Structures are given as C-alpha cells and as structure tokens.
Amino acid sequence: MIKNEYDQLNKVVLGSLFDTTEIVQTLDLQGKWRQAFASINDQAIDELHAIEAKLRDLSVEVQRPIQYSIRSPYGLSSPPLAPRDWFFIYKDVCLLGNEAHQANQPRTQSITYNSAQTMPTFNIWSTDTLDKFNSETLERPYFHTANILRHDNDLFVSRNLGRCGNQLGFQWFENFVTNTWPGTEIHLIDTEEHLDAALFFVKPGLVLSLLTHDQLPKFFKDWQVITVDKTNQREEIYKGMLAYQWKKLNPIIAERYSYFLQCHPEETMFSINALSVNQNCILFPGEDRELFDILESKGIECISVDMRALSFWDSGLHCCTSEIDRCG
Image (tube, rainbow, N blue to C red; front, side, top):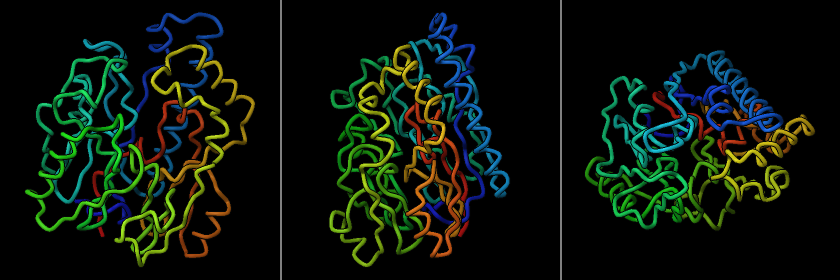
C-alpha cells in the first residue's frame, strides 16, 4: 500500500545495470573506448551496491530486477536501471506504464508486488527501436509513471509529457484514475517530462521545487515551497552533454564522461530527484549544504549518496528506485 511519497518506506525496487563485460563486447569496443565504458559502468555498479547497503542499514527491504541481455529481439535495449519509469504503486494498485518495448516486460515480471494488483496499460507496446521511437506519432497510449507523484487523494502529473508520454496515454491514465479511485484529483504541473526531477514532497505542507511558489497549482497555496535553483552544478558540468542522452553508447561521449569522473572526484551532482525513507529522513544524490541546513533545522536527516557514474545513464535516485510498500 502506498498513498504518498513520504510515509515510512518498507520495501523498494532498486534498478540494475548491464554487466560491464557484456557492454564492451556487444559494442565491439577496443582500446581507450573499452576502458572509458568499463570505468563508468564499474563505478556505477559500485554506487548501486552502496545505495542498496544504505537502504538496508535503514531497515528498508531491497529488490533488484533480473539481469538480462543488452541485446533483445528489437535491437539494443536500455538497462533495467529506472523502474520508476515503468511501474508505480498507488494505494493497492500497481500501474504499468513505460512498456514501449516488449523487452521491458521481464523487468516488471521479476518484481514481487505482495498484495498489489497489476493493472497494465493495454495495447501500448511498440517494436520500434529507441532511436526511431516517437511518442507523438505513436497511435496508442504511452505514459511513463515517472510523470506522476502521489499525495494521498491527489495525483500530480507533468503538463508537457514530451518523450515520456502522449495525450492518448494521459487520457488512458485519467480515465483509469477516475474509474478506480473516485474522488482522486489530478493536478497538472507546468514542467516537462518526468515530474520527479522537478518536485519533491518532503512531508505534508513542505515541498522542494524547481518552480517558484506562484508557478505551482493552488493546491500548494498554504504549503512551504523551497525553490531549488535550476542553475545547479549538474547543468554546468554537462555543458550540453544532455543533448546526447539517447546516444550514450557513443564511445566519444563515454570518453568525455569518464574523463569528468576522473578529474572531478569531489563533484556530487546534487539533484532533488531524491528518495524519502520517511518524513524525517531523505536520501539525496549528492549534497547541497545550504538546502541541507534548512531541512536539518526542521528535524529532517539528509543522507548523501554518490551517483556521479550513475548519472551518465540519466538516472536520479527517484528514477532508479520504485517504492513497493510504505506505511503511514
């Protein structure tokens, strides 16, 4: 059962990456190109192990998706790193969303939902490879569950779905919510694509946001909104590298990022794409001391985890986890 983003976290799915040897062999990489990919992936796998250990230290049960081949019948598949994109649980229903490729299905099939009922979005699979996939022209519902955040009887969705959904997908979701949970209200947030990169619920009455207070819906009128500046360290470091986010397997991109990891070991890549353990404890990918001081003054423990190599795969902490059980 999950009603919001901040009740006590009991069980979570943590994403996985492909085996490093399989990546370099599949891409037939040699020399320095092989080493660049290997260094990034090895470090990212270590970071995932460290996150898993930290969650277990906090008495959170952790599940991992099955490992499967980087090659699928539909071409190169993306790693099972971001379970938040392809399923989420609200109340006692598990909703499957980002199933654009049939190769994704083993990810969700490998996860145990306890008492949750699996309700897949119907007829949304496509055999297109990732570089040809276009959500706007897809003639069937398509919707990432990372577009959604939960707060009891209110759901929040990104207004501009971009590559992460289409209007048919949103309409399917809206009808599903109306029929399944009468009285639940959907609020649109003026941001693009995955909402968990722009809004973070700390606890009732307190939220972190990339938007200012007056840019948020009236729902937040009486809330304290801590605005986190968009001009963060991550944007400065990438310097346009995000333009290549669908070309991660380009060896030149990997070499540049590997160089960054070696030359900037102190960089923490801070983001509000975080994970709440409970209303008094939050895991953040990196550290923002100014923000942490504010939260700690309110009795909230801020725990920083390293995700510098994982960020190569465009995954924040909320992206690479999906909650299975929270209790209030």
